[in-house]
Length: 116
View 1 (cartoon, rainbow, N blue to C red):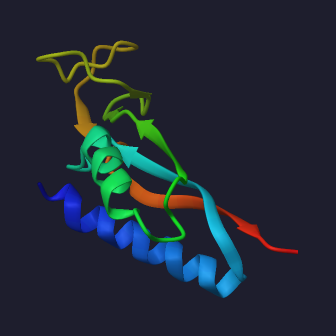
View 2: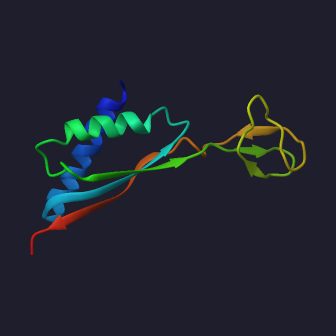
């Protein structure tokens, strides 16, 4: 349910960008969504289709780039995707710590259509 307000904000930002660019339509919005961001991509897409109706974002293609979370080995410094129930490094067997990789959530780009 918390995807609704964030999707509203994505549309607000996109509309503002479109207006500042003199756009007649938003063509694509590219989001980066980490799997540890707390947001569900499918819910954002569902809300986007509903909230965008009647705006310059209606019909825009929402591209969502997923980012898998990674751990960093405390011993060898390698980054890796965690195996279930394990914090062991697959390279050296050392213990690993969480990183911020996978917590991303931002608009990467907005493509607009202008009338010429």
